[in-house]
Length: 453
Image 1 (cartoon, rainbow, N blue to C red):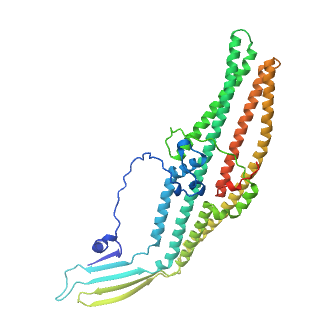
Image 2 (cartoon, one colour; image 1 turned 30 degrees about the horizontal axis):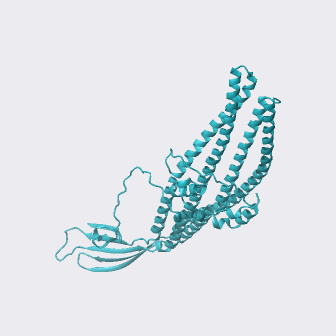
Image 3 (cartoon, rainbow, N blue to C red; image 1 turned 90 degrees about the horizontal axis):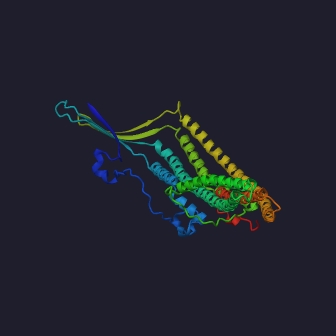
């Protein structure tokens, strides 16, 4: 009876343990445990964006819009998982670069039968898959491109997280400005309502003088309640994005300036957006990886060759040596299925890149058009606000002189509040568009801002 064993020559096995034990990897346990919040330390030198790397992280005086983005990039929980994917991709690239092990085959005669002078027969052989060497280079280059793609994908997602953090920062800060305006207006109406209600109770005024103030006060309270709900949601979303405790109350600086981006300069920056934006560069590397896999599939259509050497001894103590070659006959399969799959996959990668580039250009143009509309609206709102201030002043003067009723004053004050809230909302839209352009262009747009508002 013959016992055949077939094992990789370079693996850690019982027969080769004494020789290769030092080259084997060992098991390292990694027990699961609940994560505990650690002290937040932001190493600006590790940040992938020059504007952040050059910015000092000093949260003691409150976080500005850049510091919020820095903290998000460093501490966002989802980015940790993406960085793990990067490690896996680089490990796969390393694995693809390793040459396949040769195969060692051993067989021996375990029977005790035989005549006088008979010996135990054995056979030993060493073989190697030659075809794997033909496709090794293409598959290794494809794995390298995949690893480069994950690096660029991580960079793009870091940029996206930074952008989202800044958008939430703007939402919270502008919401606080709206809250301050509403509280000031509420204080005015609450004071007027209290005084007119007291006069009503004393019989000095009728209900017509009280009702407009009460209605205006209730309307402001409703707006405050709705705004508080939105602020609570934005604050929790920001805390989750930053990876901090949900009950943390962030101190945010109020110094977000509304910069106007020059449309002409943006159009110039669009010329090389495909060479600059990380997600577009990632799609380029993805296409290159698929192109290499397509090349590998074409190489794999040739006959698969396995080369081996054998050394044997029979039971009569006669030794023999030989060489063997085995190959496939490519007249049925010829790897045509894999070639068709890789060719179609490469075409999809090509089309995805083209679609994404065009979408990026369309998104930039859309924001530029929206910015132009908002700037035109801002000019009108400034004039409307000044006019409303004059209207309110005249109404207040007339009310004090007894030439106007309380309803007219309440309407004028409410109209002024609406204009103030509209201006703050428009400023928020312009800030969000500025952040959106910076994200879409993949650069710091400070140098693209116009000197004229």
